[in-house]
Image (cartoon, rainbow, N blue to C red; front, side):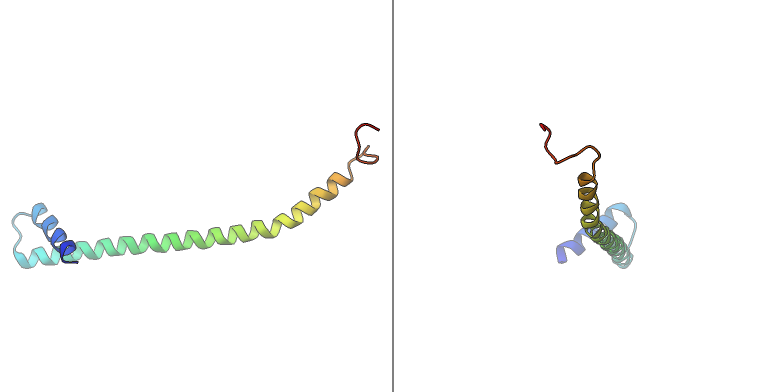
Amino acid sequence: MAAFVNEKIYEVKTANKAVDTLNTAILALLNVSADYLRLRKQELVQESVKGRLRLLVERVDQSLPAWAEDATEEEDAVPGDAGGSLGD
């Protein structure tokens, strides 16, 4: 954790050469807060996408049995199919 904080303070110091120690610490804290909020937003978006994908998968799963039954019924009712064998 200390290395992370030191890295953030170093980033602020190198970007703003004429900043005193207190302002450097405050700017570093603001940068850490901004990073946290950005990551939290990404996490929320990912959770939302996962939830929507889960719902879509459920809808597809619910639709597949009905679709498979319909396709089987259509194959059974093909005109000219007198027994299912081609060589009759």
